[in-house]
Image 1 (cartoon, rainbow, N blue to C red):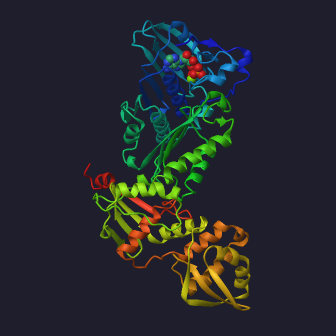
Image 2 (tube, rainbow, N blue to C red):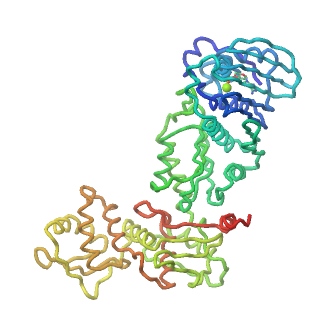
Image 3 (spheres, rainbow, N blue to C red):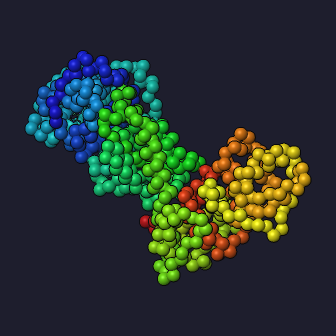
Length: 544
Ligand code: ADP
Ligand code: MG
């Protein structure tokens, strides 16, 4: 490891300094980051009483030689940067040289470290080094912090219960563990094991161990490499959006809080009611991210934030909506691949779907079941999907309207509607856009209209149409927005819950649903498809 030096005055002034030790979890965070910076492969954390009595971190990293061990507790002592320009290149988790000094100041501190050649023990109390002597230990560093804030009684008050503090530490370690799957982590409190995470071969594997109940096959891999920017990680399938055990964001592998990224993700999922699970590492040139805005370094800012957020939204949308291959259905390979006949569907949009159907093929119509005349159940290659028939149809109609693919169907028996003065006002405002959407009217008298044609797909009646004007009125100014009108129309025209469907109708609905751009979320943000994999069912039945 590079040698520790004390940062020059000029550099100190430019780094976001400040007190960083507020509770046991902040001690563990700093010690853990130092161990990771020292390239440890095994990190053991032992606490007692939620860390209030003792926080100990033992690693097998590079360790320190005698001289560095003596310097490490000094303020601004760091081996990670030497000049202010180095901050723009820094990829280590630490760089301020403050943590050990701040921790030592508020505790009884002992550190045993070895670079593999010489072992050193440093004992300090309230920041004053009491002794430095030889010790025999293998390469690595063990730091024990006892009686945190023993000399700052006022701060003791800000700590919460042992179980609360333990929870914070556990979550913290899980957060680092997901981004460092190759490192083994262990946590115990009062000798009782809390986490035992052996080195994992992959992040997916690590997630399985950290969140054993999470169905990891719901996770979609993300790997977008644009040279200077790379986004890797996982996001949950929209159909599994209600499972959100973790939502971790990393920038250059540093765990961060970045509310704008979180909001961008929700936007990509079209604001679902329950947030998705995800872990995303955004790697950029260190120069294009400012890590130096907050002492805990848990907040960072991209210099070109808009670009990164857009990229993220596009990437996530790309993987969650554009790849119907993730929702394969049909178990029996068939020799009668069915062509997709979707009037007006552009070649470009049909392509991935056709591919999915021809490779997955072979659903017989009787592989669909209707539950309570509301949900459609279908067997898929990996398990079972449940589709809400109303919102599925709503999505189909909505997209066909928005893409101008509506085919209008002339009614055998035109529908005559009397409009109230308000409804008539709404009719006047929206008739052009409604006509564009496949509803054609004739004006019969001042307040009577006759509907000649409806969108071919809509299943609607007089009451629905009359109700539609009321609902459109409720949109207020939004009535100018085509997408808002389309949402209302889609909802009014869609098959309702309680409507019996034949197997052929169910099949057609599902086929057309998976030909839409976003089969998982309805225009109002509700889920359309729920998915259970065989693996998850087996888990729930206690088979695994
Ligand atoms: P920083 O991490 O910002 O450099 P710290 O106060 O956390 O500052 O640590 C000071 C220095 O002590 C580090 O730069 C590093 O050289 C050394 N050090 C601290 N912890 C360890 C460790 N677990 N293994 C090896 N070296 C360490
Ligand atoms: Mg540090």
